[in-house]
Length: 509
Ligand code: MV4
Image 1 (cartoon, helix red, strand yellow):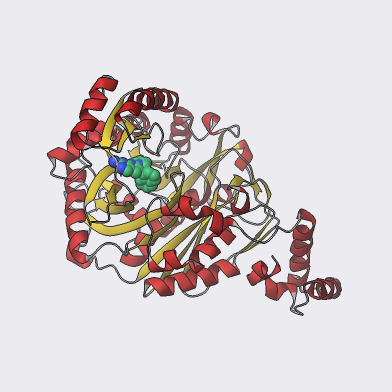
Image 2 (cartoon, protein in one colour; image 1 turned 45 degrees about the horizontal axis):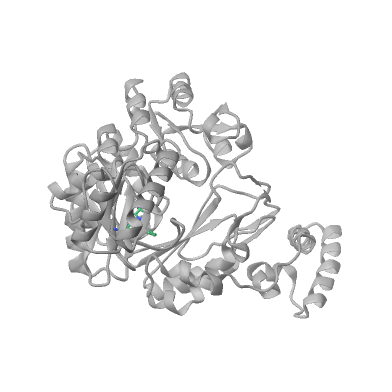
């Protein structure tokens, strides 16, 4: 095992990797921007290196600066986390060329899966089902129309360099193809510097189900089951679970075989995810492979008992996976809510400010993977995901109940968050029945986001102050807190203390 590892990331995933390092006896090196000087990942790592100003383009995306920091601190390996440089082939290569170990798949596998058309060709050759469509870029609108006519409308134009929904256009009629192709090309050029676009049959109302694989350097490739990720908005996942209510044992086996075939065809090693669309008839189609650890990996960890991040390190260090496929027996149900600094009552507008008060859920079956603490400053420089609330329970309905309970315990004051949205989701009949597809959320956003008028900033601050004062055990402050609490209780008319209400602030709305 390495003695020291550098983490080229920030926030909750940096902390997640630091935890794995500590459990394996590996010293950790954090990197940070000027905006993150007081961030938890900087404090928790054994060492930290300042890499530049707040904008990612001047810090967390500076591959050469990060590699230099690794060399200078004597780190032997780099873990990229997710986002930032995690799926940049050139970075994986540069890490290797600097004599360091890359915690992830070979650069060649990243490249093979990075081009969506190349990934489709690879999957087809491996016998993995893909959506009907082309495997090379379209020459022009005439070719697009000819292909679309052959498998029928609607079709979807996609950027070959794409991912994350950029450069995609649904086309319902032949006469709309030329204009859609032109705008898809423009968006693809802006986003990826590559105007290559191909076409697929558009699958209406599918679920997004992904398969986790884990392969070592000695030829063992394990399937760690599926995750259901259909609850998403504008290609941002909001809730993930494992397993998927839509996947039977037989389907799991078939999707798993398809995922392993695609991964092996790319020469895959380490943790990776094959994304599939699953339609209402039970047909599934390979979409793309994510060549990194994913945000939602904890739900797989909770149902399989396999520590994915630890194994990422151990595999990169050359260890063999000590279990066989039959040793992997998923148990129970896990669910994750992404807690973001976005206001669900206001079209998920990003919210900024200081986290004045934070109360974190705990208790049976609850895991909190977070990059924030009381006092954290939330800016627009980075992703709005503040934390992930993950629960485990024996059954899906118990997991939903446990998530609801944990969300009630969660209090974040100072910035608007998605917490109330998640509470409404746990109460929603369609969600509770598992009757959801990738379009569901955007069709039901209105109902889920309409909450009572928001409290004003002053009242928020007052509540935070009361909570903090009452938590303080010193007598003089306690007297003040009690007096204030009395007033607050009278105002809400429920006669309970502010501290008691910490777990159910929604009652005030
Ligand atoms: C599709 C599709 C329907 N039909 N392809 C979105 C991002 C990229 N990973 C692929 N995506 C889709 N490809 C065909 N042929 C629908 C989507 C899609 C989607 C996929 C997964 C999760 C959420 C989604 C939201 C909208 C569209």
